[in-house]
Length: 154
Image (cartoon, rainbow, N blue to C red; front, side, top):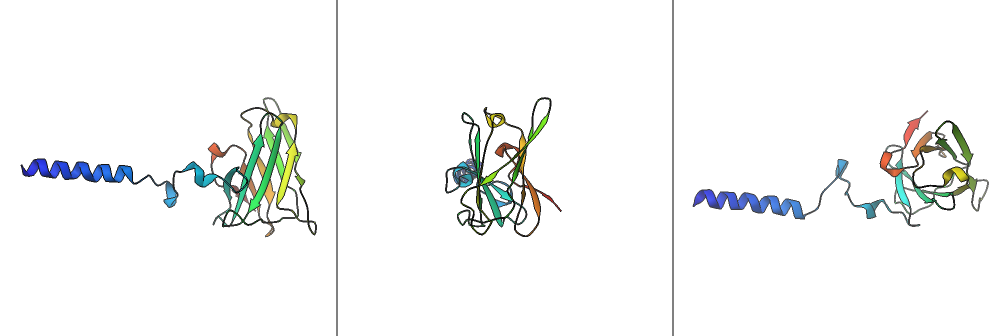
């Protein structure tokens, strides 16, 4: 009888753990909704700690990409001076596309956009090269499945 009670208790503990949700690395929820930004795009962290975020919205049919820079709260706009560049890896070549600022104020913008034939299709391989206001440079993956953290370069 005691063995049955212990086994039942173990099963209940396992069930309780399984139904409370899963946590990813470093305590982040494995919930895709957490990755959505205020404009409906996928949000990736830039740098460490995650003081800045990039929200990416891509229309694979039109060949457009919009980038919103956001603060730690994933809502507040963060403006930079230099427009990011998209670095694509094509089948037999590479291509760089400079993004254009949207509504720049004092030569700074928090939203950038690009349109190009090479941005069409479901999967594109590349990164966005971006320099934040502090002068640090990062490479943000275009495909969120290739990591959530931008690679840091000095």
